[in-house]
Length: 328
Image (cartoon, rainbow, N blue to C red; front, side, top):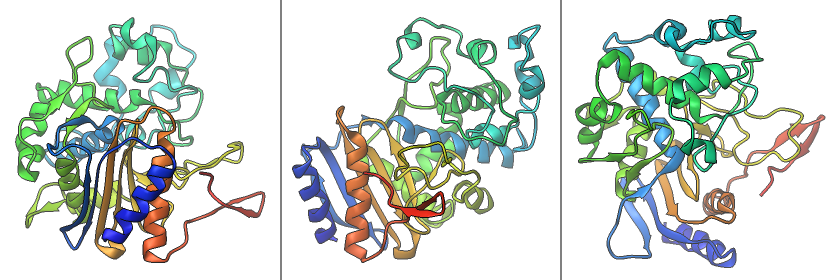
């Protein structure tokens, strides 16, 4: 797979991408690697934090702590506005709607780099009072960090422990992630949607667990039935009114994107954190970067390099009955 790595690095140099680490695995073996620094340090994986929250939900369901089809509002009743035109929709939101980014929000509220993040202290209350739940839950995909955060808070409230500690012996340590770091929100809860710091090796371990249906080193960590649901398309991420569909317009599972290569998965995070899991080739290819310019170009270069290496075609989308290529 050194050829694949070379293809990707050539594209990255051409596009002035700030790649820090890159790895390519096949049949569970590291076949090619790039390191800008000799030491593999932990970096913020940004939104690749979200699939870890999905795994927490799967484990919590196994332990009888929650169910995917249960309504969430009773756990947050004290935060609900007394009078809201969105009350009906709020009271229809289930755990699965959070997992699939389909809680009904009109707008995503604030993301990690929005100044409101430093001004709003109570993020749970902000979700229920500032959120405009204009859509029937489960019908519209809208990417929002708050869906992940609220699910994490629900798990924390029910288990009585921080999400990182809940996952420490259930997920992190069994897959070789010791003493992980996860940023906290102003209320002292796990930020959940981002802020998890891992090395590229640790991310690769997680990707391999997904590749092997929730199993790692022969031990079942997360139930394979939950992994199957998490890693298949649950909702469309593409709509006719999107002018520029891209490599993330191929559907969404449980905080996991469907890749534009048939049967593959894409873990994606801000500033160029990407891992592609390709079961048909028993392959895992990932990159970590610190690119603040056009980090989605890194994603495209990664997907294109994998497609070129294996001689496959990147999926296209039909728009107005005409085939269009997914945009770079």
